[in-house]
Image (cartoon, rainbow, N blue to C red; front, side, top):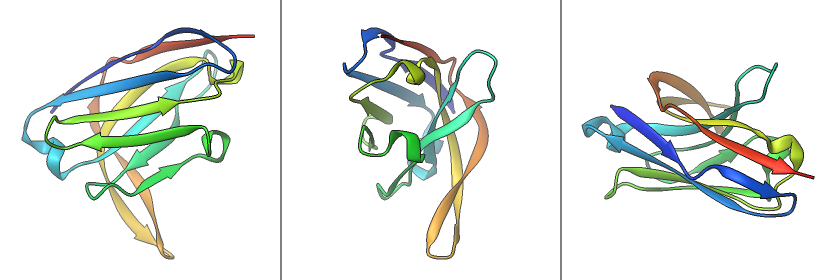
Length: 124
């Protein structure tokens, strides 16, 4: 599967952006999808994930601000980012992976397929 992320840009703190990740190939419909981000000098971190059935999961720092969704008919996953903060500044990547269950919750397993990334810059 090939992934193409878009929608990044420059926004003031408190603003919103909507990222999109378009996938080609048949694997999208059987993949759990994840959004990652990598800020300069930091490791890439998982921000949000969503299962095939639409169950979302978020890192604590973006809960109640970001919303992940997917449209399986369009092979697209979205990340709606609201109340953006300067610390959200990073390159955002989408990933096609899978998930496993543990203690009543799932955790994301990244796959080998990554989009090129889209830059999000939040000014203070």
